[in-house]
Length: 362
Ligand code: GLY
Image 1 (cartoon, rainbow, N blue to C red):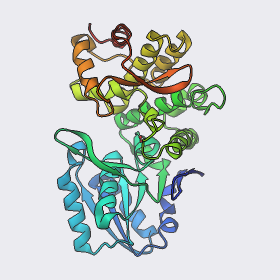
Image 2: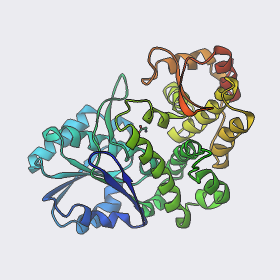
Image 3: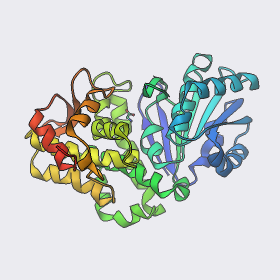
C-alpha cells in the first residue's frame, strides 16, 4: 500500500492499493451518516462491500451515466434526496465511481449545508490519477463543460487498483492518456519521477493492467499531482495550470467531436501537438519533441487525429481560442528551457506546423 499526502489545508491522504476500498471503515469511523453517490453498474459491483465495511448509517444515492448526467438537475436531485434522508453538516458524502460521479458528488458536498465532507473513491484510472485529487468539482451547462463548480478538497482518496481489472478497455486507455501526461510532466532532469522509465520497462504489463505494476503506476502519477496541488491548490499562480499539458488541443478536438476519441486519446494527440509546438517555437530540441510523441504512442494511444485531414486548422484555432482557460488569446502549456509553463499566443507558423504534425489539414 502507498499513501501520498496532499499538503493543502487541511492535508489529506491518497491511499493507493489493491483492496483500498476496504479502508473506508477506518477512514469514516467518526461519521454518523454516510451518503454514497454512485451509478447503477458501479454500485452493483461495490456498494454492498463498502456498506458492510462502514459502521454508520449508510444510504446509496444513484445518479445517471455520462457527462450528460453532470447537471444542475442531478445536483438538485441529490441534495433533495440528502435532505429527505436527513444528511446533516457533520455527515459525509462518498463519491464512488469515475470522474462524472466525483465531480457531481463533490460539488453536491461543496454546496450542501454550505459544505460537508467528501471522500473520493475513484474506480477508473482517469479518476485515480486526476479527477479525484485536488478538489475540483463541477457540473456542466449547455454552454460548456464544468462551467459551474467549486474547489472542495476531499477528506481523503481511496484508490483501489483492483477496480481497474473490470474497467472497459476504452476507459482504461482513456486513463493512460493522463498517465502519459504525468510521465512528461515528471520528466525533469534534476528529480525525475521515474514514470517515463516505468512505462518504457513495463509497457506490456501496464497495457495488460498487471497488478504488479498498477500500484506503482498510479502512485507515481498521484505524487506528481499532489506536489502540483500543494503549490497552487486553487489554480491562482499558474502552477496548477501546468496540469493542462496537452489539454488545449484535446478540449478543442473533444468540442469538434465526431472523431470517436476518448478524453485520454485526445490528450495523447494534444501531447504530441504540444511537443511539436514547443519545437516549432524553438523552446526545446528534437529529443523532447520526439518524447512527446513517443510516450503516448508507446501506450498504444493515437498521436495523430484519425481523419484529421478533413479538419481545418482555422476551425481548431478558433475552438482553442474559446477554451475556458484562455485569457483572450491562445494559451498553451508547453515544455521549454525553464520547464513546463504557460505560453500565450505562440507564433502562427509554429501553430500551423504543429497542427499539421498531428494530421490536421491546412
Ligand atoms: N485536471 C486538472 C486539475 O486538476 O487541475
